[in-house]
Amino acid sequence: MANPTLRWTIQHLSMNVLIALGALLATIAGADEPDRASTTSGQAGSNDRLGPVYRDATYDVTVTKGEPYAQGMIYHPSDPTRSFPRNLTLDVYQPNDNHHQKRPVVLLIHGGGFWTGDSLMWSMVTGAEYFAQRGWVCFSINYRLHGDRGIAPKGWPDNRPTYSATRDAKAAIRWIRANAETYRIHPDYVAAYGGSAGAYISIALGASDEEDFRDELLNLPHERKLLENSHRDQSSTVQAVVSHWGSGLLLGLLRRFDGRSRFDADDAPLLMFHGTADTRVPYSDAIELQQKYKANLELWTLDGLGHSAWGAKHDGLPIIDIAHTFLLRELKITPADG
Image (cartoon, rainbow, N blue to C red; front, side, top):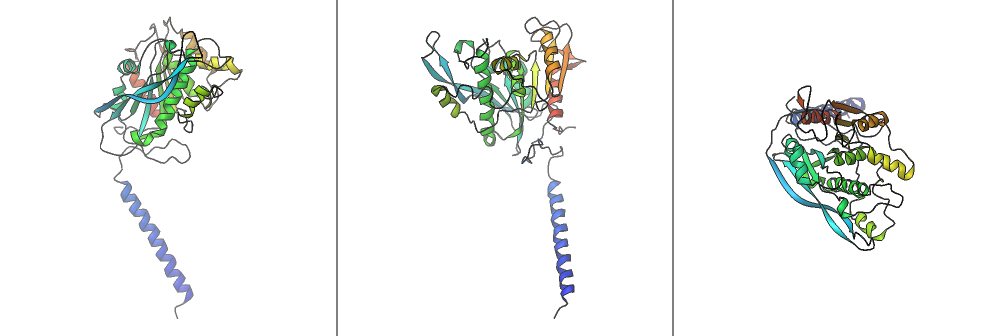
C-alpha cells in the first residue's frame, strides 16, 4: 500500500503544476491582445477591454442618421391640455474596424440657445468624425427646443425649454447604454461634449443626480408613459464633460427649484473653454462655476476671443486636440499610438 504522506505530496505537486501551466497559457493568450494598456472604468463588475483608441485619424467612419432614442411630448401653444408625442432622434458615427472590443462614447449636444440647432449642424461644427476616426463612437443628439413647448414641473424657474432639453439628453444616454451591445460601446466610458446651450446641458449631466430632469413629471400620466419607455433602468451618468463657452445655468435652476446644491466631489471631471470677450455667455460665468465645482475642473481661457471660437488654439494646439487629450487622461485610456 502506498505511503499516505507520499501520495499527498504527489497530488499536491500535480495541482501546483496545473496552476503554473494555467498561468503560462493565460500569459501566452494575453500576448495577442492590442498593445494599448487594458483599461477599466473603476466601477465594480467592469473588466471589459476597450478597443484601440488613437491620437490621430485612423479609421473610416460609418454614419447612421435619424435613429429614434425616445419620445418627447409637444404641447399646443395656447392650450396645454392638447399634446402629442414626437420621436427624438440622434445620429451615430462609428469607426470601421475588424474587432469586437467595446468603444468609448462621446455624446455630442448642439448649441443654439435652446431655440435652434440640430444634430447635423453640431456634428459638422465639432467634427463628430474627428472622434470616430480615432476609435470613439459618437452620438449627436436632437432634443426639444423652445418651439416644441415642452413643459417643466411646477415651480421650475424661468427658461422652461432647459428642463425638457436636459430631460431628453438624459434619455439619450440611457438609450445608448440600453443598446450597448448593438453599437459595441462600453457603458462606463461616456463623455458629454457640448457648446453654448449644449454645454449647459453637458455640465448638468456631469453634476446632477440620477433622478434630476427625469422623475419630476411622473405625476402626469401622459408624461409618465413616455418616461417609462425611456430605459429608466439604465444610468444617465457621464464620466467626463467638455464645455465650450457654457455655464452652470441648469444647476442653478435646479437649486432654485428645490433649494439643494448638486455640486460634490463625485461629479464628472470638467474641461471648459471660454473666451474673455464672450458677450453671449460672459467669461465671469466660467469663473463662477470654477469656484463652485468640487470635482476636477480645468478652465482654458481664450484671451480676446468671443462666443463660438471653434477655430481657436491654446499654446498652439487646436482646442479639439486639447479636449481629446483631456478625455483620454480622465477616462484613463492609453492611446494605441503612444
